[in-house]
Image (cartoon, rainbow, N blue to C red; front, side, top):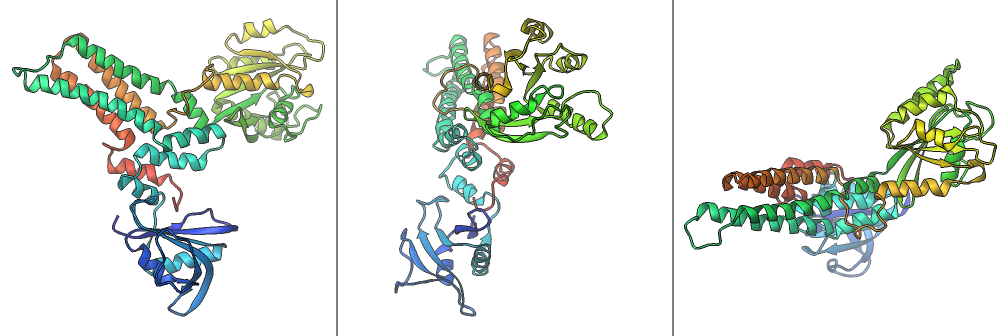
Length: 457
């Protein structure tokens, strides 16, 4: 924390602008060493962008024309003195400017170190810091909205409110344990049960958003499976709204899995169009079928396509067996042709799956598929609570631990166990929730969180 750090803060590659960020108490001194303003000013003015040149004064070598700004802490991203040098977006310019800055006393920042300093200096709590990387990696409007909401402190505020309730409960328990003979309000087991239950419900409300939040953040993998020539590639192209997979009447055209990332109703979806699963002697097709089975096993959701114009085959029934216990949908395709079997037959074979009749070649049924995926992710809810969702695995795990500790405390309160034992579990819940926002977290966890960040952020 005593070092002055520097890094390239923009993505590597050619661009209009590339930014070198410097943070620490020597930021201004380093800027003076490398920057020559075009106007006759003694030193850069706080929060004023200044035009000038980056010059290696040791050999009087011009590196680049730049705009530089000095921002005095603590009202900066890291809450320290910060300098940003806006160079031309050239890899050479950025590399040479950064090398000069490092030579003049800065240290190369570690991944996420600027945001880590913002956290350690109290400008962000840990959930807000983690939301920074979610904002950067957001693939849809909804995932971006959730990340921005967390960056603004929505989740932190909810967790802090629950911790305040837990702290008040801990105070009541501790006072009754330590000062039983004093003139204070005695805490009853009925009151304990009521308070613990209310706090537990608050945690459950947060956890109820976890499944949806994770899918919005990470996306869902959807495998499209079925025999050859049933319409898998047509579905892929229909969902993509473009021709990505080759569609022919020749069975076995798709020899390998084709993956595409798309957004369906603001939900990140990874589509995997698989090779048709059937018995074959073709060595290349066999390899494709093995990859299809692997994609099937790794998928969060499976779309199984049947050709409604031909009778169900042994291969169809074999694939159907794999769907038992999996989240899946069955498309009875080619509804524009004479149907060889009824939808009711499919529902008997795969009772847990949603069954939809489609004509993918005519573009019919795509909206129904998208509706189903949206309902599956949002759990059928018409509206979400603003953008307050738990979407981080670390947060979910700690909320689960906090809930389990409260359940233990509630069980002991119902059995009227000693307050000392109940206090331990309530305190554990308080500590677990403190880890979420970073108030009781270890250095190892902090290092692990920020190691996931990109360099320069």
